Amino acid sequence: MLDRERRLPVNQDLQFMSLAVEQARIGAREGGLPIGAALVCDGTVLGVGRNRLVQQSSVIRHAETDCLENAGPQPPDVYARCTLYTTMSPCQMCAGAVLLHQVPRVVIGENRSWQSSEEHLRAHGVDVVVLDLEECVDMMNELLARHPELWSWG
Image (tube, rainbow, N blue to C red; front, side, top):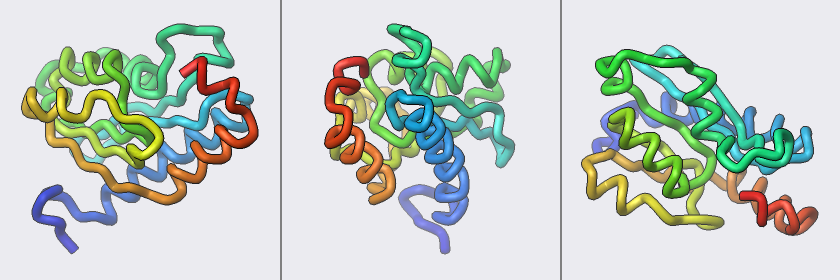
């Protein structure tokens, strides 16, 4: 099945989002925030990452920046063909990284918990797709119920 708005098979988006979800679950098991990301180019996974603010006592190691760091430097023509999958709507810093590297497409697992940069990304020509996956919503709801103090790290 091809979703005309997304221009990619829905199951392909779900397949790559599952990598971000897996990273989010690892982050939660490590005692951190359950947010994960994956960078994909032409069907090849370049890198995955998870929010490590708590684990590394970091102020910038969000899932998206961790993922980009783990993918390593890429030529501009590679970034221009990438999709960044993230379990949660990106913050302004992570949106800035998307724009800096000119990643043309961002697929978001959920945006009910947090939303700050989607319109900014769209205004700069980024194709933003929100899947609204219950498993992503559930991870954040569980975090907020069990460890609300961790949200202040986000």
